[in-house]
Length: 128
Image 1 (cartoon, rainbow, N blue to C red):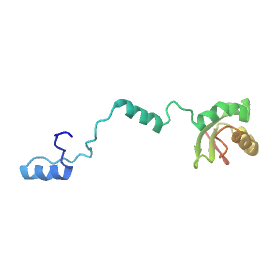
Image 2 (cartoon, rainbow, N blue to C red; image 1 turned 90 degrees about the horizontal axis):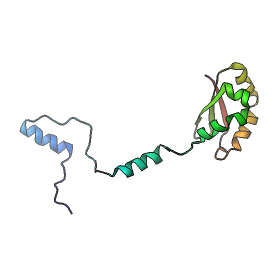
Image 3 (cartoon, one colour; image 1 turned 180 degrees about the vertical axis):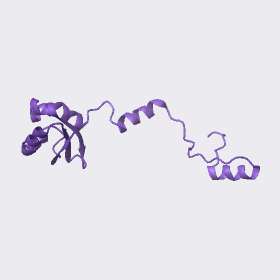
Image 4 (cartoon, rainbow, N blue to C red; image 1 turned 135 degrees about the vertical axis):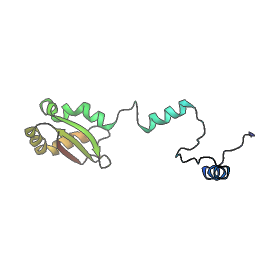
């Protein structure tokens, strides 16, 4: 056990400061224990899935196979919404948007064959 005194809570520090006529600490920061940098970096890599392929990335890579090269040129899958049940696709040409809308059942079927994408139930086509 160390003999270092523990810091007082901010409320106590401010009470003592008011008795002494010192300025109060109105900051929102707090003292946190020191941690090793390696563990902090590893935690952030896991939290933000850095270095790991996301479902969106996998779908973007396979998008030309799913909709065809011609339609893939004018459309771009952006994000999975509603807990991975809906894929949002930006489409830059209205004719391609109509084509994708008409073939959405076949597109969803192909998407569900991609590993990890079996939960996609809807396809949202947005102008972009």
